[in-house]
Image 1 (cartoon, one colour):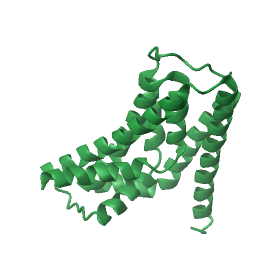
Image 2 (cartoon, helix red, strand yellow):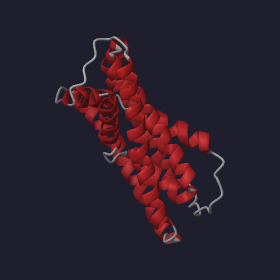
Image 3 (cartoon, rainbow, N blue to C red):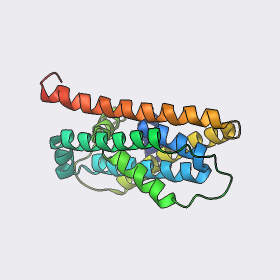
Length: 211
């Protein structure tokens, strides 16, 4: 029984982390430029944010849920602004070279930036509520040992997804030339900016009553 609860958490973590988004682009680019550890720490930052959202959904922390739902547009705009800054920095910064196996110096920054990029998406907690409902996970506000096991599974599932992504990128990393990295940089920047426009557009549509 307990093992199945953990497996449920792993599956939820995979389902939340897998959809392509700006964090995926960020993790792939950092892995290409700075190596495996930079990608893993970035993925871990996103996994920790997903786990925090999962805890809110699983533990039934109604105050935070209400706040995120009420301030959804504000949080979304903050996230869109962060994406814009990241996208334009990628477009206009000098082209980096692909690092060797030396551990990058900014691992804490990689982790925290990915964490805050993920945490500024309040839709994630709503996604958790929907997926938990699909898996038959219910919360009455009481924190039980089963809830902690479920959240541990979410962290394990999300972290496993990012580890697979990073390892997949590392398989092809040595084949990237300067030209390939330049294109990867531009594509990453445009994808991140497109997500920013999409988030801001969704807020605008809600404001005008179309959503």
